[in-house]
Picture 1 (cartoon, helix red, strand yellow):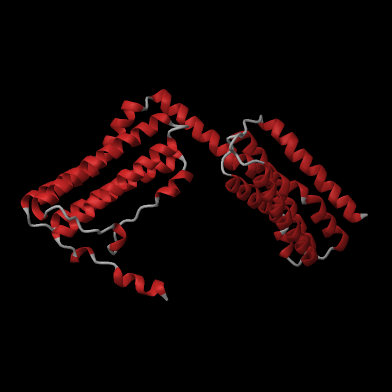
Picture 2 (picture 1 turned 45 degrees about the vertical axis):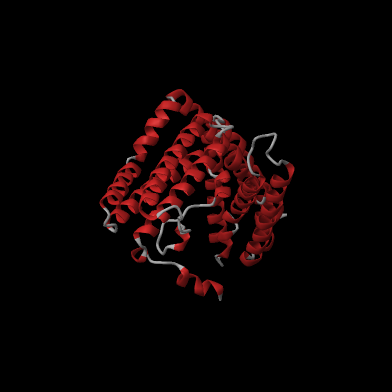
Length: 327
């Protein structure tokens, strides 16, 4: 019921007075400065050069805020109305400070670029709505400044982040991505794809009942996914190992484990036994080659070695399941 009344308390941008437009701009610059400072603090330990870039961007936003406050005082006095983005319909939103702690470096850079683009559009529209010449000039100048902030960020980046530092930071970000997502996800995919082969194909050839085989495969895949997810999340909090959030690793491992098993269980939704089985076998080999590719691409395992480890080993497990099912 409360949500139904929320739109009524948000003002349209066209209804704002010049005083309120300036107050809104002051609050927006203050918030953006705080977000950039949060980005800097989040990056400081692993990416000190990029952190310095966001420190400087926060200072630029503070400068903009001070210019707006000076204009507001000259026209309307010292009392600035409290009006924020969330008070205006259709106004661009910002993520709260505490969410930036989970953003990787590339997403932070992209988010900052989007923030500046949105701010530039706001100032361009605001400049059209004011009649005071000095205020319009200030808002227009800020629109140009925000639109050119990408260039400012690039200049600051060149000042604080040389190519060698950028390469090092990109390598650190890639390594963190591998440790947090690829490694646990790959372990889950291997476990789900290989460990469920024997029970699923043993059940298939023992019963030759596609529906029963599907239920067994579904239960084995989901159960393995839950087990792997909790195991990954519980055994390492990531603080010492540097492998990142246990929740993210647990989700990556659990979801990929379930996917690995479901891939060759889903074909048994087909009522015809041999059609379902041939399709399931084809899916198995696609899964095993995908695992070998990921090992080679992200874990730098030689491709032939990955093939021998995964495809050959998986084929043995598949054969074991079929033999047991026939017996």
